[in-house]
Structures are given as structure tokens and as C-alpha cells.
Length: 333
Image (tube, rainbow, N blue to C red):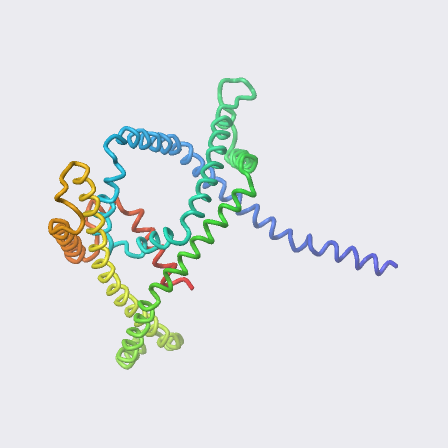
């Protein structure tokens, strides 16, 4: 009887002994990350009013522009952006097109659900920032430590959010993104295969040349890595060349497509102005398409697909997105 009870007690304490280091480690990480969460909260508190104000101003401007039919200018602007930047952000534009065709409606509903929950959290956070339980004229959030403030804000977020809707929205966004990545991998499969082929050719040529150099450079104990270094270097070069070829092709295609969008928007605008001679399919229409397409394609080639200042600063967020989508499509498997 005693042996059975001792075995039961030992089995019951084993999970606790296993979980204890884990919980302690998690607690330590949270304590160290507390200043980061607090800083993030301060950044959100500072930026949120400006974001809301920018959204409201944009909606007001859009409402005032309604008599001038601003929706007709969107194809003009979008066409120029695609014609002049289609090669710079060809993976991002391909992802947007894939989203539009196969997952945008679901993703839009999920984003709206997250935005509704964000508004609830924002309102509750504004109320919490004004709470003064001790009635000393100073909000309580300004009189507590970082650890307590982080715990308080996390508790507020957890109480304000709707867990089923938030998790469903996040799952929907992630599944939509994975679907787009799958579509892009199929679309660019030939490019990746071409890069692997070019890399294999480079490797066959470079191996007898680079192997003696690496043997003289790398210590003998590490020379087992020489074939791996040569292989990855050649494959990286091959994929880069294939991606550059695809970038040129995409720039050529996007310049024509963007020029067509621009010319159609211009034809619609001229038609509303009473210039009926300007219609899709006329000589003037094709002249504009050719001029815009050639200018956009030539500018991209001349710039070497690198943005000049200050466009490189203004469009930096889109550059980061382009890097991320390219990595997900071409690297992450």
C-alpha cells in the first residue's frame, strides 16, 4: 500500500517538477521584456491619435472630392505606379493581384474584425489612462512601476478583446497569406528552377577554381565545409540572376499594364469632359500607352531597379514588404 501511494505521489509531482523550470523561464523573459512592452504601449498611445486624425482627414477629403469623381483618378494614379515601379516591387504587386483574385474578401472581413476590436481596446485604454482612484489629481498609470503597468495593460487588453473573433480573424488572415504564397510559388517556380540550374552550372565551373583557394584560406579542420560554401554561393548567384531576369520581364509587363490603366482612366476623364474623340482604341489612346510604357520601363532599367532619394525613404516600408514576400516565396519552404 505504501509503495503504491509513493508511486502515485511521485507521478503527481513529476509534471510540476517539469513545468516549474519552464514557468520560471517564461516569467524571467516577461520581466526582462517589461520595459519593451511599456515602450511599445507609449508608442501606441502617442501615435494612435495621429493615426485616427489622419484617417478622419482622409475620409473628409475624399468626401469633399466626391463632386469631382475622385474614383476616376485612381486608375490614373495606380497605372502610373505600376508602370514606373512594377519592376521594383514585382513580387509585392504579384501578391496583391493574387490576393485580389483568391483571398481578399475573406482577408478584408478579418481585418475589419481586428479593427473593431482595436477600437474597443483603444477606447478602454483611454478610459484607463484617466483613472484616478486615489483622487490626487494624477492618473494612476503615471504612479505605478513598469512591471505593474505592463500587467495592468495586458489585463485590460485581455478583458477588452473578443477571443473567438480575434483568433478567427488572425487564422483567416494567415490562411489567406499562405494561399497567396502558394500561388506565388507556382507562378515563380520556373524562375526558382532556372536559378537552381544556373547555380549548378556555376558550381561545376567554380568548384575546381575555388577549392584550392579555400584550401589555402580555411583551416584544415574546417575544410569539410568547402563544398557547402561553394554550392551555396553558386546557387545564390544563380537565383539572383534568375530573379533579375524575372524582374526585367515583370517590369516590361507591368509598364504596359500600368500604361493601359492610365490611358483608360484618362480616356474616361476626357469622355466626362466632353472630349469624345479620346476613346479606348483610338490612335491617341495607343500613343499614350506607348509613351507611358516606354518611359516607365526605360526609367526602371536606367535606375537599375534602385530607387533614388527621396523615393527610397518614402517607399521604404514597401521595400521591406517586397523583401519579406520574396523571402517567403523564394527562400522559406
